[in-house]
Length: 242
Image (cartoon, rainbow, N blue to C red):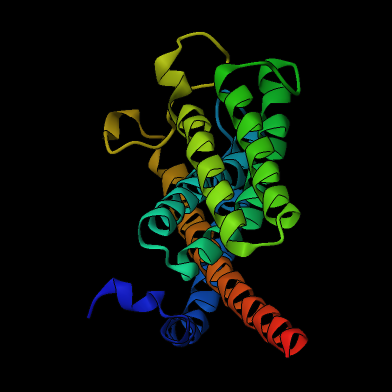
């Protein structure tokens, strides 16, 4: 079986119908369980106090904001190369979900930053690139709405996605590229020496798993909706011609 089979809208819809009933409860268990575990059953940090617990929302949402755009990039490249409509519609479906994750990350980052830095916002390299990424999300969604022809919209938004990927990567690696700024380095790493303490790590890992599964479920559901809308527009256009 090839992954390209799911470029067929019918097969994609069937696959999503099989996966979604599993994804919803799994994402709910991991997300709710991780957040309750983190907020109510972990100690305060010796430096940051209880504000450190924002990590259970901030880090997973920031992770999905960046990776959501990279998922859109992959789908856009598939559209450019293979002209599969499902991939273009999947990228379109992911944009509002990724934008929401970006808003959550920006808001929780401000809540976390205020007691740590004494300010809600600084023009830090990572924060600035993250804000620009959010503006690209808005521009991407607006471009889809502004262009009537779906194929033309898919072409132009794919190009926009390529450009915006620069800021998605910058928001991930800005701390490594520039030593300036207040934002800390990576909290989670495959290197055990740079990870946070296990008491914070495990509930954060559960919350991240919940965010990832929730993102996948929402994108699958929204892609199904986009496919149905495309079919409906095609039927309406056919009736108008006839």
